[in-house]
Image (cartoon, rainbow, N blue to C red):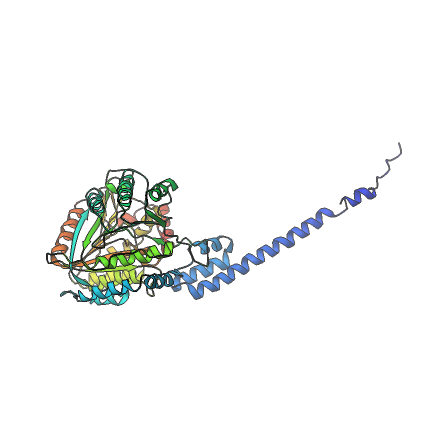
Length: 503
């Protein structure tokens, strides 16, 4: 048979794109386009690395970001967009605008507090003066401080106080979760709003990610002013989720404030759960220092909604002789790292005793050195940590500090009766602090926090008794708890320590 004739493509088929070599041409175009994408990604990584060198606060952080952005830009770029910033742009301008909008009343409040200014008799490290310089808020006399231990008692006192409000209620929480507790507060806040009492309710949208729109809508329908903190608002980077409002504040009528570790969720009631009973501490404060707590709320509220509510600023003074108190609001909009400097000042001020309770413990080199020096000068340093993991990465990172602290003589105590969430310090015989700040970089540098310093031997004795009772449910940490564990555990601990800047 004769061989089949070779078929020649018709002109129509040629017009439809069936050409010899067409597949290789598409491949060339694809490779060219992909090369451009790769070039742009690495160029963006280099530009962001330069930005990190100029803008990241610490040299360690700048180096880590720069190396990551230059080497692995595909992974590092999105992480940098979310976690890279360490300053909260716009908040300072919002704060100033808020102070202008209320006609200088906040300035009058600070001036009124200043008239009650009294420095503590025992302050060897001049901690009080340092905090006044950092915050612009004075240490005042004539305050009443009540220690509230665990959620059952604390929330009962808070609900009773809110129910008696006549002028207004200000409430701010990091975590709000729907349940029996949040329902009880919704009921009392709605009732006050129906009575014509202004109510402002602020929550952090990241900490309260489980909160439904229905809960906020029902509050608004009752007349409550509700807002989220809006961490990414006003920034250059809309992906920025690094900053969180970790404060827990309640203010009633300008004369009573509540500050501490308790969030608005059922687990804080100490009823048990996956981690067991929740151990926490809150503080009820009355007197001139309440105006400073109220000012911190005002700045947060103005940032969130762009307006300042009308508030009562005349400081009230309890009839009985009270405590000296100092309010230290801290956050990423501060000119200096106020929270870190406060912690370092407190450690350096200690002469006999330094007892610390913190659920999250990821200190930096400066904090480790200060703790070591405290032990060397004879201070009884005890740090109480939870024995159960709430956030696994933070929990693991804490083991990496055993060698540095235990060998120096710091006593690390693991709380075993449920989950320990309180943020408390006891310094010597006359100073105790209760607040929202943990011993980690997130609180030191990235979160908005608030701490109340109470000067007075009576209150310090109450905190001493509370912490001593907590120690009864602790076991002493040993260096072997880390060094004798398996290789995989120790490797995970060291990897988690590398993540300390964002934990």
